Amino acid sequence: MFTGRYHRTGRVALEITLHSRGVVFLHSRPYHPHTCGKVERVHQTVKKHLSTRPPARTLAQLQRQLDAFRAYYNTVRPHRALHRATPAQAYQARPKAAASGTPLIDGHYRVRHDKIDSNGKLTLRHNSRLHHIGLGRRHAGKTVLILVHDLHVRIITTSGALLRDFQLNPDKDYQPQPQA
Image (cartoon, rainbow, N blue to C red; front, side, top):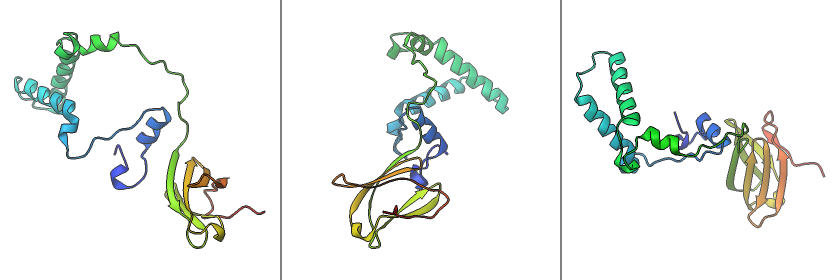
């Protein structure tokens, strides 16, 4: 699975890996093929190409036909949209990004809006485990912003007051208030 978005399961490994390398993971709307027009168009071209060939009898034959199509499409066939260049020529002419060897963004980030319950607590899910965070009854009912970077958690009010800044202990369900 490429995303956990539609199953409400958080982010999957692919999304986390792309995010850690500074890649923005965008989704097209499901069941709306017009948002994926370029992909639909290339599928049409592949189908037309395969219809001019003898039907493949095995998966290996089909793979050879698809490989031949890809080579022709990318290195032989000129494209009008590329001023009669092939995709391979257009790709080679583009400046290449230099890899720095380090991720642009490290770790897992989350931002969540919540309201402190009447007992002065919030809940936060980490690695599919629910943790309760103590803030004190004096903060009951306040709307807050929870900023999470891996195990580092900051809780601020909507007016910007910092209520808590701590490292989540993943082994404990309850994260008590610090002793004053």
